[in-house]
Structures are given as C-alpha cells and as structure tokens.
Length: 315
Image 1 (cartoon, helix red, strand yellow):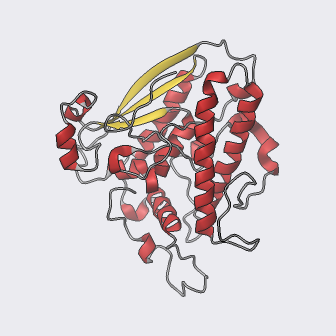
Image 2 (tube, rainbow, N blue to C red):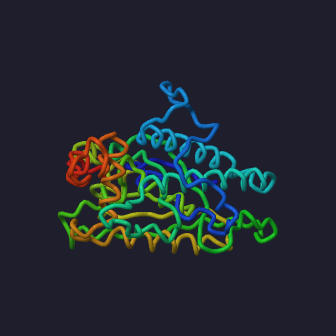
Image 3 (cartoon, rainbow, N blue to C red):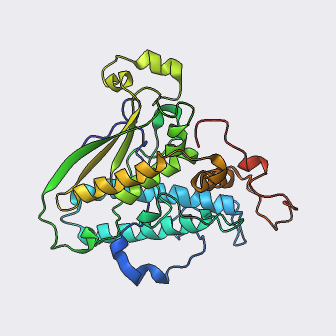
C-alpha cells in the first residue's frame, strides 16, 4: 500500500473524499430512498427525539457517517482478496450515503439544476482534507471506486491480482489567471469537493507547489525543508492511484478529466458549480434560506448572507 501524507507535506486534495460510485452497480441501488435520512448506524443527534431535525443537522451527520465509512474502507483495502463481499457491501453503503448527500445538495431552484463537473462520476462526490488550513479536518485517506463502466469489485474473477501504482501531474494555470482562486474551487466547502473527486475516482489528489499552503508565512517557513521541496515549483496537482492494473489508467484519466473541468475559469454569474459549492457551504453553516420558507420572504437563497461569495479561500 502506498504511504499517505498530508498536503503541504503533501495533502492537497486533502485526500481527499464520491461520484457515480460503482457505476457498475446498475439498477439494484434504485430501491434506496432519495430522501436524506440518517442510517441506523450513523450517530444520532443529542436533540433527536423522533421528530424532524433541521436539514443542516442531518447533512452534517451524513457527512460524518460517510467519513467513517471511507476510513473503514481504507483500512479494509489490504484485505480485499480475502474479504471481497464485505468490501462490496461497504461500497454499496458508501454509494447509498453519497447519493443521499448529492440529492441534498443538488440545486433544483432558480434554474440552477445544471450538472457539476463531477456529474460524469454519477454522484456529488466526497474525499479528504487536511490541507494545512485550507479545509477542516477529516480522516486523511478516503477513496471509493466508481466509474460508469463495470465495477471491478463486483467481478471477483475479473482482476489479475496485480496492483499498479501510478502518478500523473496536472498543472494549474495560475500564470494565465493570477486572480482566480483555483485552490478554493478545487477544495470546496470544508474540502468536500476535492474529497468527492477522490471518492469518485479512487485516486489520491494532492495540491502541490507555491500557494498550496493557505498561510503564506507558514509556507515560507516550510520552504526548503524535507518533504516540502514542491513549494519551489509552480502550483500543480498530483494524482496518484494504486489500483488493479486493469483499471488504474482509466481511473487516472477520469480524475484528470474532472480536474480539467474544475480548472477552467468561468464568470461567477455563470458558474453553476460555484453556486453549488456556496449553497453547500450555507447548508453546512446553517445559514441557507430556501425560497418559500417562512424565513426567506422574497429573498433569493443566493442573495442571503449564507450565499455571498466566500471571503475565505476555503470554497
């Protein structure tokens, strides 16, 4: 297994976190409810008494539950050959939860129901974030296989058993767009966007180079130290995969396509992906106002305080 490290000593994609996970799962997952609910094994809110809880509270619980599932999956990865059914069931549960989270964050109002750059993965992704201050703390290693093609986990006889470790580099066009917040767009609120890239592709995504550490003073302190040599290079992304040789190249290419989409600057007024991120941030902060709610009046959810452009570089 490959060694995992955090950004700034590594971590960018802060690891991290779901997209059409296991697209090979086919229609058998269609029986799951599309409503956002907390699975029996997920921790219950101390205020839960059988009644309805706020959407943001349930969303946060689902995020925590998903983080635990992804951490367990990472621990189980070395035992895949001897526990294929347990691994498959765990991935099915990850698929279910990520689908619920996607349904909770999809924009269905104001005509903002456009697909995100990760729609090719099939879910509204999830992965990891350490990021030296770029995002909140999550378990540092998370990934879940997913692709529109056959799911290798569901085909025990399809793999040769050979594992290949490969890395590709994706340059970030900061010289062409010096004022564009590429790191914030990649990470998303609390690092969730990058976590989802990792989870949807089963790759590890690392943001490297100048500007990969949020605090410029800390970056200067770390520059030149062992493990931080990348800080002398232009801002870039490393995508790492350690997967069965039959699928490793396809997963890397899938990750590259998603990242290329995310690294294409857009006018903010037309950037539906950014608006999804802002809506998710407001949902996580408990400041989202849905149109038609008693609190919202005639105010659009995108004009509320929770939906203003984030002043931090987090999302």
